[in-house]
Image 1 (cartoon, helix red, strand yellow):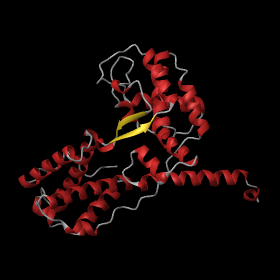
Image 2 (spheres, rainbow, N blue to C red; image 1 turned 120 degrees about the horizontal axis):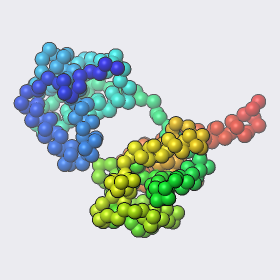
Image 3 (cartoon, helix red, strand yellow; image 1 turned 180 degrees about the vertical axis):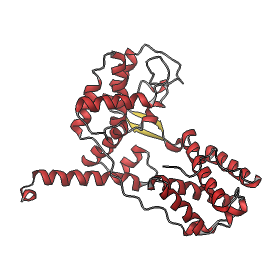
Image 4 (tube, one colour; image 1 turned 180 degrees about the horizontal axis):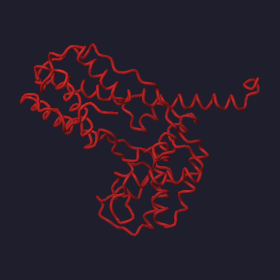
Length: 316
């Protein structure tokens, strides 16, 4: 993949456009409360689009250029991304970022870009979340406790128990402060967009966290991280991902058995047990019910698989 134009290679824009981009970034960080990682991705996507415009229009784009674009200009950008080998999901995200920026320009009085309303996002396949079976999830937790270093085994078990037992994202779990423990019957979690939600905590999860803290050689202040690495610093996501890779090899699990798959498993197993879709949406912190509804496809797919494997008529 050759790429379109990197953020560093982008030609300088005019003063008004530069000011608008700065104001947009401040708004994303302050009012939308995007994480630094997401904000950087938004900036890169917009920079790539503006870099393309510099080539497409034959010079650095101005705010006036942006507001006078035609649908064909946006489609040329989408076609360029397709030729460069970008995934449709990546292009859909980049187009969403450009739409966000254009709407911001309109609301703040910088200018109106009506052409973008005529441009459709790339059609994306509906990905079904890859959940573990209940037996595989249980095996992961059981095998996690077999690490050489007892406190690290207890730490990893506590972390993975929060992902599977409470449906946390890996970033949410690693973002918990030391003051969150001892865990009560519910836990306040800071999710995407810095939105807080409360999730119930199972006794087994509370016990796993308590055991970890009892064995951990690291103390720390209440506002320090709950989960610590081998040298006492904040535990990094790569450590949990490496642990899951090791567990996949030992248990013969597919490549889709990642830390995030434990969160998928939490939702899928709740739904299969009769959980309410709206309640699961709240527990996962999904802004849209349509995101949670993907798990109904998992449940249906598993039912069909069970039918095909077990029903006499399926084998005729």
